[in-house]
Length: 523
Image 1 (cartoon, rainbow, N blue to C red):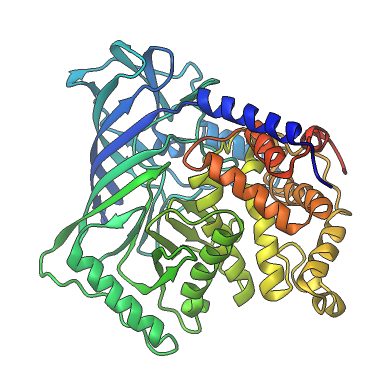
Image 2: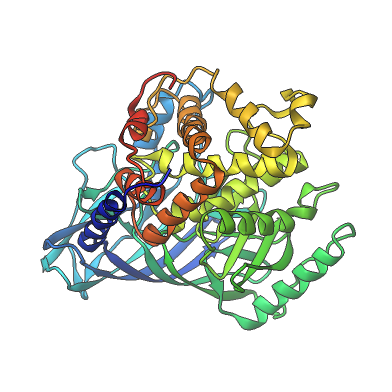
């Protein structure tokens, strides 16, 4: 049915006003870091240029110093884990950050701890004078990190290093104020978009995968050459990396623009795969996977999974913006399939079958849209990245395999024989029968357990989106998401921004539909 032109123009005008008043802070990092693989430590320094684009002057900047979340049993991270009925064992893994010496424009800065004594992974850096709207300030500090044995997305295990949540990082300041929350295992991040130039020094035998583009031409060419050969001969013994230089150490430089975070991974035994992805508009994206040389590994086809995810998500939502995409095999972790960072994701799914490994990789690659390019507040509105992403993951699984991650092998043969759209309808019909009491719009730290968090933020949200798809059709849903992407990529969209984009695209009021986000129990 055609909608009145006046109705459509109204939503366009509202959207334009919201966009005009929108602002976000700007951050750029220069980081130097060295890995001591014997002591399992990092020694680093960083200089940050922070531009205040808000209409207010700032007297201080909150910083996340997240390695301290791993420091002792009294941190917010450990306290939250104790309250989680889904967690049966408490980890015995400790890490920390020290050696901080903040300077603001070269002058030693006064710092203050958070008022909550358990939030030792947050620190207030006072500015010597107010940072006026439109002005920038340079902030520098050294830092020393003790890495924990691998736990909650970060650390080391079996010769592999997962360097995540590792550098001092300004908290987000937006229209709602500061978001200086502590690190938690359940509920992820909210980070300013930034540019990064990171110099990583480590023993020369390591293969590194990181956020951003490797600037060392010879090293990059070696990765591509070895990786392409391993793809061409994927069922044979893989070719492994050997350092070209006889030096004991090397420094690798990575550059990334307009990303909300930076993570890197290193292992001497990584197998590299490399290929390219050509998107419909002609853009060519470099694709890498890094995995372990194990007998009968499922990762022989991992490069295909990465490429297919990028192609499909680009077609459904909006074209992939970054110059490369990567997936890394991490340590076994049955409680977490993986963890995403811009342009690179850690996959920790040890018991996967080919189709489930493909689905996990697709989900984590999908977070380049719902986390990185669309930078929502994952702590307050977890559904806005996990749930939206799961909706597309379920479609991905249905189209390729007629499978679903929730039901696995329980799906009857007659259902698997259905066309993809009918298969999805059957899956969501079955999902609607699962008790899901908690409201979708629940902050991550307020879920009863990680099981409840996963069920609601991922599954209930996907079901909520499918209710709309059942009304308007998949093609219109794609266009609604494309409108959302076009209006909000590279920004921090809130739930009301998603609603406005959907209403603009669909030409209909969705107030009652979005009220379902607050509904306890079944829809």
